[in-house]
Image (cartoon, rainbow, N blue to C red; front, side, top):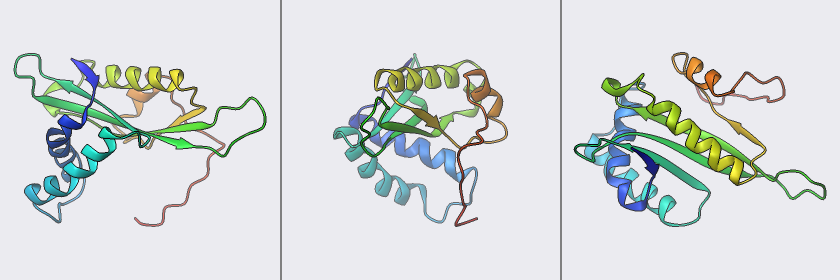
Length: 154
């Protein structure tokens, strides 16, 4: 089941974030310390209208969260013409390894894109891993020639 996340999901979301990121970079804090730091941040973002949204996938049997996608709305400066005034950034897309390639990631992306269309978002952007590029391509994402970036930390 994919659904919108709520502030009550923050403890499990923080654990999923640790599982996701500690696979890419060696953790410099324990899971307990990270969850204690991350959970209030997530709870706050999901409880208030901060521009952050998240979706979760829950196991049908145990109701345990098994995946997530976060989306941050990025305001553009006001425009005098008929231009959308929001961008959206998709981040922290994670599905537990044993449940990958079963359509959960696609359902996350579809949910996020539906929300973005409803909010009249101009552009949705993300930084994919090499492994996730085919998934995003299936949903219409493509490399862009009109965005420049500079990595300040490696």
